[in-house]
Image 1 (cartoon, helix red, strand yellow):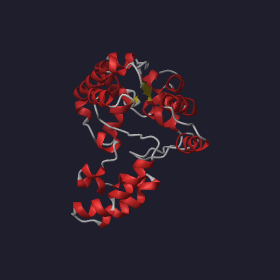
Image 2 (image 1 turned 90 degrees about the vertical axis):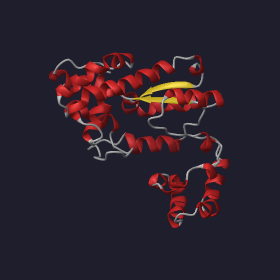
Image 3 (image 1 turned 30 degrees about the horizontal axis):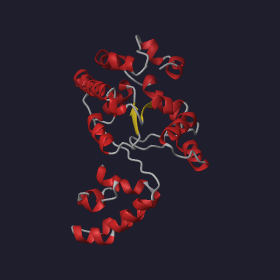
Length: 247
C-alpha cells in the first residue's frame, strides 16, 4: 500500500501486474496489454511496463486506494506514517454482506451463525479501533446504503472531506453507474448496477427470514451501532416501504 502511494512499483510482486484489474481503468489498459506480453521476466517488466505506471503516478495530484478486507489497525499505522492521508471507512449492513456471500457461494448457509459471529466481531474491532486519537482527524465512516439512496449528496460530502473537486465529469459518472432507473444489472462484482437504491434493498425482498434472523442474532450490537433497523418478522423483511426508508 505504501509502495503504491510512493510510486515505487518496482517493489510490487511480479504477478500483481498480470491481474485483469487494470482493465477496469481506461488509462491503465495499455499497461495490462504490456504486462500480458511479458512471460516470467521481472527485468523485462521493469523496463517495458512499469516506467509508464511510474510516470502516471508521479503526475497525479491525488491518490485514491480501495482496500478490501484490510483491518483498521493496519490503517492506523498508515495514518501514523502519513498524517495527511484521508481515510473513508465504507461499511455495509452485515445482513446484506452475509446474504451476498451466501449467494455467490463464498460461505455456507448452514454455518451462518458462525460466519455472522466472525464477521461482526471483526467489524466491532474495526469500529473500536477508529475510536482512538489517531482517527480524530481525516477520518470518515460512510454507510453504503446512504450512498445508494443519495448518491449525489453523499459523494459531494465525500469529495469535500477529501479536499477534491466535485466536477461535472464526476457528477456524470455517478448518474451513469448509480442512478439509472429500471432493471438492476445481475453481476456479482461489478460496480455498475444501474439503480443503486434498488440494488441496495434487493436482499429484503428475496431473502429467507430465518437466515436474516440468524444473522441478526449474532450482529444486533453492530446493526444498532451503525444505525440500521432490525427486522422482527417476515412482514418487516418484505415490507418495501420499510426497506426503502428506514435504516
